[in-house]
Length: 412
Ligand code: SAH
Ligand code: SF4
Image (tube, rainbow, N blue to C red; front, side, top):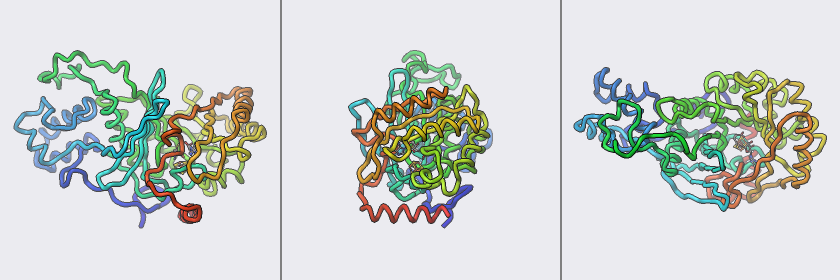
């Protein structure tokens, strides 16, 4: 079976409707909400007005009940409730790390599970969002890579993670807003809305899955997240990470326009073929050329190269020097993010020693390129980079090898 998408067909299921026959409005464009209302029987003018109001309530106020949408006529609210819902993913489990990182296992309407992670820092808070249940790819150091791809997440399920995070962090505005839509709001005296002091300030598409293999839904979700009348996150605060799906990179830059992170992880074909097997399809030269052409990348908005530090695999001084050479050869506005390998049960790699990571970082810094070492966060709850995996089963090594082989064959 082919999945909808632009490139590289993989198998997936369909996304079920939440709330029985009722249509979930989360994830629809404004236009989509308008036409859903028209399809349900509203005339064009009413649908236009109501869609604007509903959008504002969903994405600016975080409201999930039509009854709370106080500028919509009282008589109309039950009519909406019968036909539509404003959904949220179901929380299966929620965990908190000793370092404050939080991880949620979420379930979609069809029971499929995926994870979301929130990483608080002194000056910001980053939500790590999943784009797929499982992953088609099989990077050998990644726990998600040991899962088969179950299906793509829909735009609603992707943006739903952000909405849920706002719910749990208690970060929806209360009180009056500048918008005239709120004139008959019942909580007028609750004070004025301010966006300052929010915990959730940044989003990274670095959860489960390869976002560029689910381009349309990821794009739809991020457009909603960036919409000024709503969540209104700046594209500068959103980063999309790809393992190197070269044919989709230019479109990601042109049509989504967020920051790009590229999972490079190795500087020569032999090692990258082994640890990021997508390299056998799109090699390092092609990948770096696509980075050089990435729309919107410049010295103020650099491309991040992610580099997982694997003991005796990709962590020598010569590797660091080659990384610098490549970045310079392609004249890339780049920074390097060194990620100490996060272990998971059954992983065949070890993390480089702290001294090795430091030496690797120094070589890159000395060439004038920034190469900070990422502090692992949430390791105790398996929430760190590459530790996410939703199925509780623990496949044998033979089973893992079989999955890896299948995935490789599917890549062609
Ligand atoms: N699928 C996307 C997003 C992945 S997660 C991608 O591959 O880019 C974000 C980063 O974590 C990627 O660079 C990924 O390669 C890295 N990663 C995966 N497993 C890891 C592990 N066990 N330890 C450290 N980083 C890991
Ligand atoms: Fe998939 Fe990214 Fe993990 Fe590779 S690192 S297996 S692309 S989630």
